[in-house]
Amino acid sequence: MFQALSGEEALKYVLEENFALILMDVQMPGLNGFETAKLIRKRKKSNNIPIVFITAINQANEYVVQGYQLGATDYIIKPIHPDTLRLKVEGYVKNYKIRETLESLVQERTAELISANKRLMAVNKKIYNIIESIADGFITIDKNRLITYANKEAGRIFNQTPEELVGRDIRELVPEQDYPELYQEIKELAKKHKPAHFEVEFPKDTFYVVRAFAYPEGISFIIHDVTESKRVEKEIAFLERLNLIGQMAAGIGHEIRNPMTTVKGFLQLMSRKEDFLDHKDHFTMMISELDRANSIISEFLSLAKKKSVGLERKNLNAIIETILPLIQADALKGDMCIKTFLNEVPDQLLDEKEIRQLILNLTRNGLESMSPGGSITIKTMVDQGEILFIVQDEGKGIEKEILDQIFNPFFTTKNSGTGLGLPVCHSIATRHNAKIDIDSSPAGSTFTVRFKIFK
Image (cartoon, rainbow, N blue to C red; front, side, top):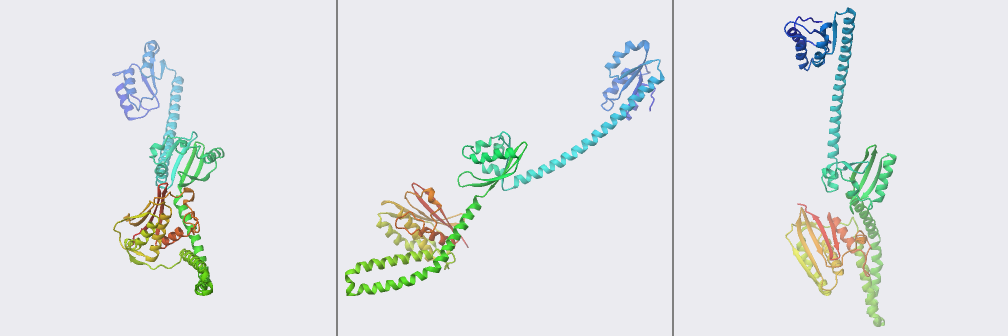
């Protein structure tokens, strides 16, 4: 409790201390009560301190309105009854203590909220960094199917920036009429609020596994690209089939050839005897068919995955030039032509015999797909650390429905084909750590064999 004898002294105390109540006469030496109250109210710290003016009853009517305008809280009219003064002071002090306690609680809770908010912001930042750095797409949508968040990978999947995706209707990007089963899954998910996962092909030949999680405000999606893993699985399954066929070929090929050799030998002997001269054409035809069967078995044996290869440092262009006359002779028979564009390529570890077979199979396959007057283009080049061998024809192309089957053994669309030419090419490429790409349209097909350059 402090006592001041003037307005100036009161202001000095107010500047230094915090008070529960200021009791002040209207009439004081120096600054009067109203002037002192006006200066007190200008200070932010003391703006809320209750000010109770004390005045005589004969001055009350004159001063009350003026005092309230200057921020007075209450008036005590002289003469003052001690009980009245005590009750008023106790009331204001009690209110001050309550207010002080509440302010302390508010400060504590505010500090706790600020601390909690900082921790939450730190956690959110970590989550954001994780979501942005993962290799999967992440998207959230609200109940109206509008995108509320998209990470960088989601932007790459939809070929837009994350900022462009936010606010878009997911149905604009993935049309509902094209993917009815997907949206049925989403509807069921929104109802049951249970996690779900499903596979989507979007666009064609690009596959994603989508994991979806529903929450009250909408649904979040994690989109994982499985295109490459599907391709690898398909390639492994294909190689396993080839391996099985190769094992069968290795197991029975020689056993079949032995009796065939015996039969061919007897046919050749019998064809020379006078008793069978009238049937010489028949013998020639049978021997020719045995030779054809032997050729098919040779191709069959080429499918063997574990077939040994004699790798030597050779130049692909040199091998092509060696067998080019044979390819040109095949083309001339069908009134077709061969065009070559052989760019400089480095020497590579190759099995010349197998590479010759690969070249012949691909070029003859192209020749058989064309009508007279067509041309085959053979190219070589180096591209991004690979040697490319390209065979381009002007045939009618390969139908999309059968494009995935052309490397399957015994699959053929030709009346006289064995279905082993392209599978043999695939096996040769595999043994050389190479890959065969196909680009086909009604204007023709292009087979590209990619050899990795090993120094």
